Length: 179
Image 1 (tube, rainbow, N blue to C red):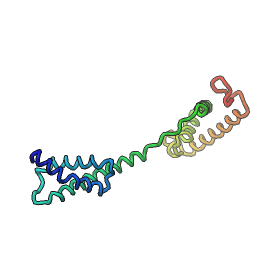
Image 2: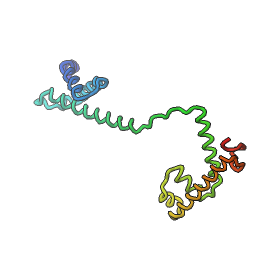
Image 3: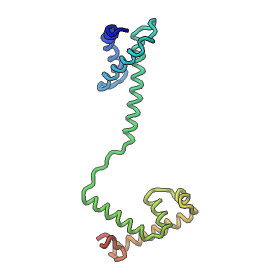
Image 4: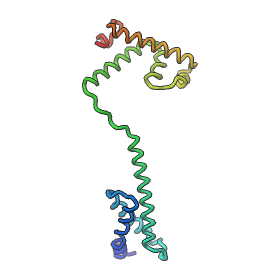
């Protein structure tokens, strides 16, 4: 098809394709792009078109297919956007300091635990693993995991009590923890 013939076809049917795309639910912001895609396909496939089939029906079929493709793309993008965690509200300097001190205290507490208890406590209480998962990861029996966790929790309670009492054994980084 010549350039003049294609231009004529475009001018004669662009409004029809635009209305159809809009009627099929393409948002106003995307309809011009979709119409452009329709006519790219038309130009590419015009030589393969069955001349006995009505031109408007052929254009409608192409438009419908591209609208469906567009809709699937929009749904995929929407699902990806839904999976994105919105950014949290920035913390203020006081919150940042409190978090840093809490992390330092937790590290100081973890340093007091024997390796077995520390591993179980960190995996379960900090990282959220289940007891059966920890048993498998550590290569120990399930009752051992529960025993170590119970002991670590008791040590954490004692550590917290020492902090509240101002016990010098709760020193962190050369200063008294919690002070």
